Image (cartoon, rainbow, N blue to C red):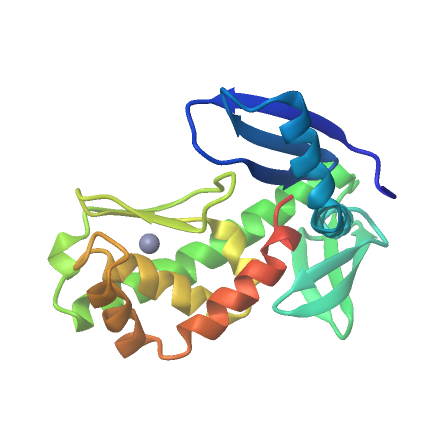
Length: 226
Ligand SMILES: [Zn+2]
């Protein structure tokens, strides 16, 4: 195999063998009764798939956002160059193909913080009123008890049965159509708490292109975490 990786075999009460790939790591989940040869054969027969997934994962790893001068940021579906500008008022703006972070004695750590504040600010001005507006349109605004914005490890949004809507502010790096889909998804959970057919029909009624947006997110979301 071309990529180097570690391999872990996890035995549990399960009936089938399955493979899970993370950057540089393969996990094989197997039944308690599986023999060593059986596991090895399984891995061998899926060699091509494993190799493919490992290189996919490491490519994704390389595309992760690193907030440093000269690096690239994937902002609203465009690849821009991060430019640190020293001095003057703290601000972030785009100019052509540049994503300019300006601040006094700017370091990567400070720039990161500035980018976080920038996205949180954008999220509170965009997501919160739109989620409320859509809920009002659907007649369920009274069900919202709180709208939280927080960076979570892997999720874009969440809705609890107590009416707490939660959004990951990193989504503000995505185009507005994608953000609007995420807003709609969680607001629709105020009506249907599951991912049933009724739920998706409702999502479709307010966001007809949701399937396209879900695919876009799957393909690009790894570029937003920093
Ligand atoms: Zn959901």
